[in-house]
Length: 162
Picture 1 (cartoon, rainbow, N blue to C red):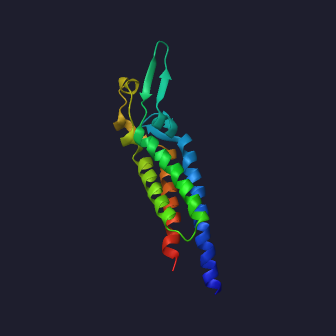
Picture 2 (cartoon, rainbow, N blue to C red):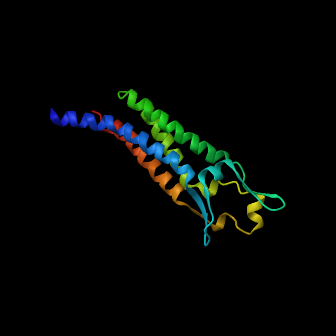
Picture 3 (cartoon, one colour):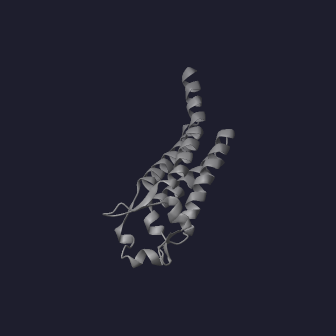
């Protein structure tokens, strides 16, 4: 009997862990997500998704344009957290858990494929720095890892039930 009760507590704790991991992944949006090889230049996930313009002496240089796919990835991360909250509220239903897992996995793909989904502006290619010279930053790596762990935390209660 005690073993079954301990398993129930574990199952109830998993959506809460997924919520915390999702919030951490959302915070990673403000850390460096993309860096330039051989330099100290980094850009946050916010800049890569919503666009970034650097003001120069005479004119503005558009470094990144708005990227719809990266924006959808961030919306999916917020949706995954909301669905994990619904999963914690209704522990008997697998519907919210499956949707949360799907959102976490798609957000993870957006984190790890961030360089491929970038919309590079004209100001970035003028300096000769193209997507070939970019590398993932710490924000993108940690955001992808926390998204993957959030997906596992949402999926465990589905498989741990009777």
